[in-house]
Image (tube, rainbow, N blue to C red; front, side, top):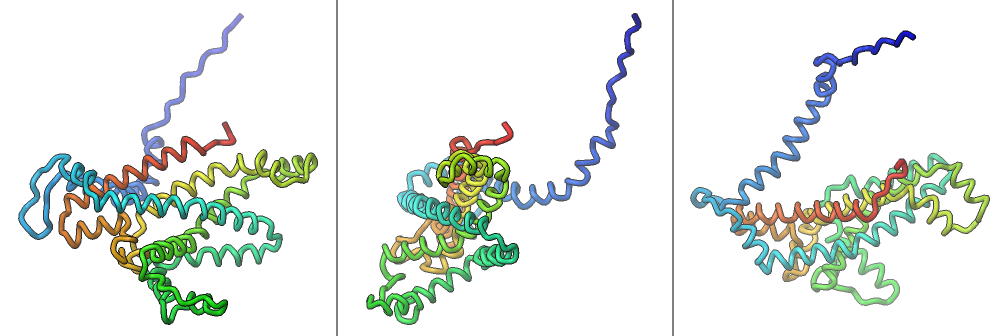
Amino acid sequence: MSQTPIKPEYKQPWRERLAPWFFVSPSLVLLLAIGLFPVIYTGYYSTFNWTMGFGTPSFAGFGNYVQALTSSDFGWSVLRTLILLAITLPIELVLGLVIAFALDSAHNVWLRRALQVCLVIPIAITPAVIGLLAQLMFNQQFGIINYLIGLIGIAPVDWLGGSVSAFATVVAVHIWEWTPFVALVLSASLSTVPTDIEEAVMLETDRWWPRFKSVILPYMWPGITAALVFQTAFTIKSFGMIYSIAQGGPGTSTMFAMLQIERTAFRGFNIGLASAESILMLIMSIVLARIYIRLFYTDKDD
């Protein structure tokens, strides 16, 4: 009985193996230049003592990290950032989920597209411009917010003059700015739910919660995880909008992490310490992202 000869394994020529890298290399180089190089550069200077404009950098090892971790100003700014994140993130997820279901239930294609365009507007506006608009809207004398609450008999509120009210203003503006982004991410995730499976479950029960828990939510976990990761990063690095509203005041009530780092770098001219604080915030973002992925991410293809 003759045996079928075994064909030698085909080895792809090296030119064909390198071809995909040739096409992606411009984007890869750009990504490394824009994304990775600043991180390496910041990490490098975080190990030096350098007061910008005064002398040359001197090696400090992990001294800047120790100083940042023991600094009360930086510690309180990180705590305020985490409080801002803990308040805004759940609200943005709930509102984004509601808007995503509203978009999904809109059967008119043109109406759905118009709503999606409206959601893009807050994302497209520069954060500094959003902060300036918010400063005008929440102005005690001329702001439209006080005008509207005055129509129902409430006295004007000095939104930007009190510690609690200024913090609440930042929270409200942050929610307005980033809820549309969460809604678009969750709307895209909602579109991945197979309609045939959803219709089959509707034959079993007409209650919304069982359908959402058993069919819709498992397919939305990747989108929810992505929204959590992105919103955590956006909140931690928030600067332009918050600075335009209150410049970190009154007092230190809105002095969040990025504002504290800016003050250390460009008002105290301590580049080494500011770099170390930036790296610590990056590490915190990565740790939180890993926690979200570990707790919430599930792949329906597994």
